[in-house]
Length: 329
Image (cartoon, rainbow, N blue to C red; front, side, top):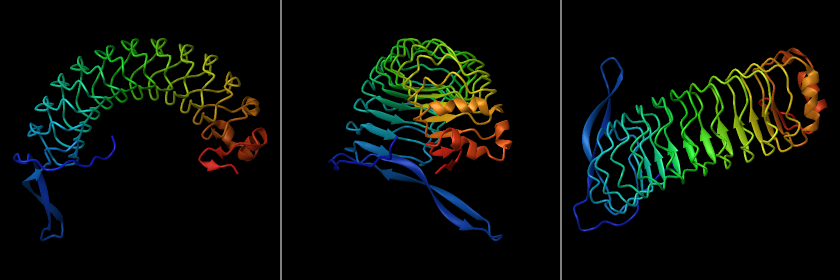
């Protein structure tokens, strides 16, 4: 969520305050720096439409009763344990509680105008409490303790769903989310690509760092532009025949020994296939047909031992702009 500034003018009512702790820095007799925190009150403009309370050491949501014009509330990097006392903020479009100590999604039913909700880096175990948030467009739940995808299939306006870094094993219960354009499942325990056929508007799909062994069940996702499958156990490049709009394909850190079945991807501009088992230059030779390819990552494959590694890539693809992390021209 973008940085947020306060807007509006002061009213006649008492100005709301939020308690925070401010630190005074000192140095002890051994030269070690320390900070003494003192509790202070931060005055808040009750007519503000945007409010940023990042890094304020807040442990509770309170004193928002008069802020009925608030549209964006950012509370990143605090110590908040419970979502509460914000039910009156019915005009809220964005709520950011990234990196707090929240264990339960609750008390959001009145926030029917919410479009962006960020609860990443908390301690949430279950997706719940979203029944009335039918206008949600972006939902961030990464880095929690979620084991199962539940209670999101009614969010028909959802465009982006972030569930990375959880404990999810199965892709399920999202078949009604046909408006999704971005879906992130990186760093979970998913062992099969499945149940995505209805998500025909997907442009970005990330399944990095899971337990996948096979590329499959992507044939309906013909709008895919970016596909991220790094850090899995995939051995063969296959089943991408219908994904002709791919511009970025990330297969790095797998167990692939041959580049194949991609010459039909004529819109591909970036191919990441580093950290695999490719040792045959004949395999790389097929890339001569990929005229729009601009970036190729092949480092940390056996063929990098060839002293003419970069020169051979340039001979195969004279137009290439970047080889690994270095510009080719």
